[in-house]
Image (tube, rainbow, N blue to C red; front, side, top):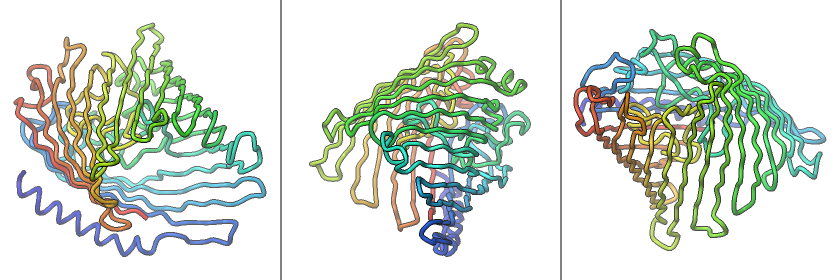
Length: 443
């Protein structure tokens, strides 16, 4: 790894993070009279990345390496107000995002992106004990700009695709921080949640995205779940009611009118060390060209061994024309961004692929966890593209202080084909050494 990545970029991140700590020590509760609470939110995430290879996603990069940095700063207020029955809640938060230097290794950003925009802007009401049959806060209604996740993020985990100025002459630019994805909220939402933390529950949601790289779709979403201490069974229905005409024609010509039906399950079957999870999603289009995706996962935690190793395997399959929608890391690193290089730069992007994933996580202390994530990618339809490859990522999550988290990561990615052979890596099939360091301060 070049010393020009190690020394100046990490020093810059450390200096910026240390400079923010005095500000964050002043954050927290602003007002509390027993009925109304107002708290101040302030968080900062800074990252430095190096990729030894570039990828042919934008058409603007050539063979070589990339070094870049990203930053996200979020600040604002959260409010709750107790009522005789239930409570009101809301938030108003801004997010500032930026990318510097080369831009990412796929060319989605070029390092020129900067913006500050409202991120959270929502209000809601929870029912408290008003309807005992539905449980505590068994009715929750909210509207506004907010983060929405369904299940473990296989279909929806926020609106987090943050493309920059690197493609489409900046038409899709969302303001920087492509990897960190500082903007995750749906622009307009109306959400009704029925049911408490256990038993039968469900959601009815209307979601409007302002994300140009998603063609600004409007979604109708319904979920039904049965939740117990041992399992969660869920069903999801999604209908893409509309998209931006021009962007839809350019990016997702089949998305408007698309319907998605999903069944999922997760739990431990009464065995605390066991983890099982799976989901099947069927997509129907107006042209009767159906697609599907599914996964099955099993894991075991060795609670009697030192560092309590967690070992898991997952197989996932995404048909050749599958629309990956708004997937994300709903559970942990590597949930649905599969492979730090593959998921962010090289592809596949949860479509036209079979993926084998093996993960090992160790917890030496309450403040430190270490992990290894291994992937095998196989392309289903190779007539136009072949993104076969292998990747291994090694990472740590260190809670350095109560407010500061440090996440280093090293990745090794080896493509089966270069860009001239239907792959995406530019100029060669060499092993890519990828490195990143993330510093996050939260209050």
